[in-house]
Image 1: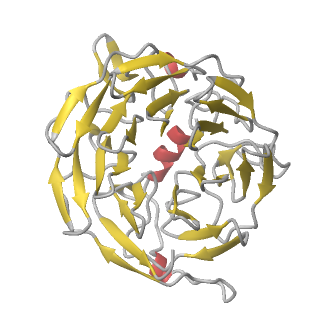
Image 2 (image 1 turned 120 degrees about the vertical axis):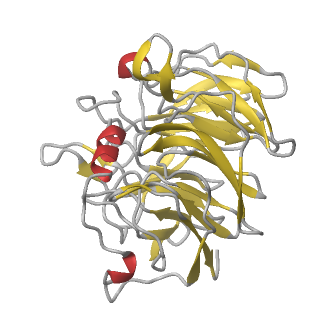
Length: 386
């Protein structure tokens, strides 16, 4: 719902301000750190690629280019600042797919692309595993759930758990399945206690999957959602989340990260009598052990969607996105202090729907949709303390 509109707006001809040219308020605190440009890759510019961090390299694959969906990818080695193209995948080009890292393989599944007997971009239900050690792809067993894009996938208890998304005709879905990579087999999940949705967020704890938010349709006209659920992978049982604080209005296309203790959600798009879409600039933290929410302190960032977020081990790091233009700023949120700190200006054009990972020490940003089209550059941020 929000995703389709945001992308269409994000690649329009918009005059942007480079972050270095923007004035910060005198009271804003800025984190100490240094950005360095990445080496150039041979990949075409793209938005919404899947991305994983292998502990050695960032792997990006697929996404949407200026001429259509893409089916190639590459790995970026941070230590040598070099890119290596991936071998051809046994998958058709696609966007709206997911990828998870198992510890030795990247699992790619679903998305939307060209499909026989279907016009335009259609939901897909196939996937493949990529082994960076042997540089080989292996098709996944057929899934027991229907084709979809805009779903979520997390890796928990040695299984990829897929849920929700948009199916045939853009209708939102409320089913899912888990995939055992060792056995190359799927198991259908029991029915969830929440309704169908797309553009929601999911996070993995040690033994649970947390779902929250989203919208009821993949196109404008549906409802934004403000509920969530917890799936226990050990017992196979679902439980409803407690209702969020009144300030946490319904939204989709927001940022969400797991801290090891809490699910943090921030930003996104919603709707009210006063705005369509509403640009959310607030957030809250959910503790699954107490089934309770805590509002976040106000953010120094403008309300937006299409941003990316990672957990650094201490802070939620949010960067990029789209409000009334593509943005190139970001901030750190510390849940212990309930405080925000702006990131230093970045030597990149503003963007949304980019690839972004945290390595344990640095932030890697690559690609995305800019004001004049898709981008193929990136940068590395090293913070003085993380």
